[in-house]
Image (cartoon, rainbow, N blue to C red; front, side, top):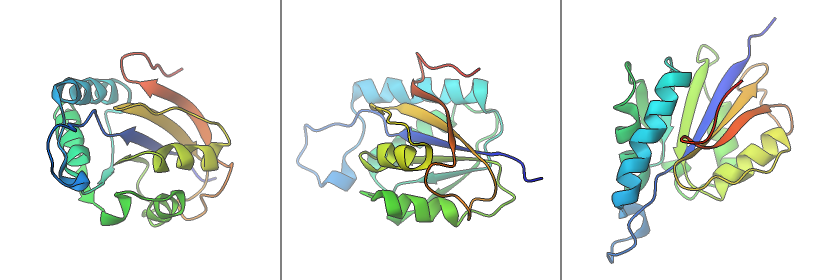
Length: 165
């Protein structure tokens, strides 16, 4: 029997639109700087063992993960994946399908609308992922077998308001 895996999706924290930098270079604004550690505290409470973080190369996604992972007692390897920036649902699905089967708990730190589309594709449930929000999906079978409507949405929302059963 194959064990269930967990895919955690984390939308980057609130970014700063005040400068004239390229989209990929936008960093976090003051609200984002406080949101990301809150998400990390929630992760530390509910997922003390994360095997891998896949992070978009965007400055706001990298900063979100740096602040969130600082709250964990053990920060997992972070893999920057260029495909996760401005990714379509198919791009994100491909990233996840390529994961090694020995990984049980993986977090994907990226952007909308791709993350919301991925959750919908995998679970059939529509979620709203505001900045710094998480969705937790139970994944039966292997990562490579991941397909439409086979995952289970365990929870979604902002770290300050979301719980797990």
